[in-house]
Image (cartoon, rainbow, N blue to C red; front, side):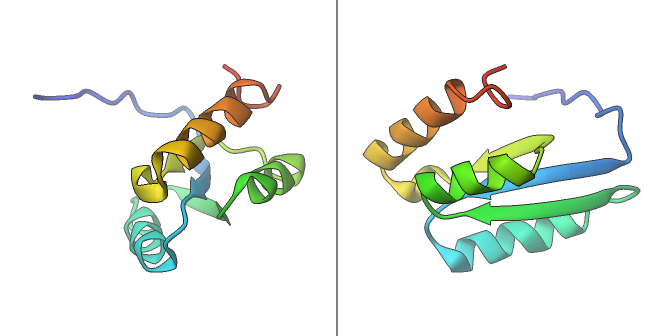
Length: 89
């Protein structure tokens, strides 16, 4: 299966990473840092409160959610993001 990703129209990426495993998140950070030709700003949130804190001061271009955070936590995270004015779209 091939997925085509349209290039973003910015030289700066603000990436919010949500997860509960610091080791896996550090691997994601290392991969994101290698994106060529872009300035990448990252923030990490480990729980719902962290997400809300980050969204209050950080305007993410992209939100990456580690699907290993658990079914309940994943559902709660998506619910919070779907109802936040900055991320509901």
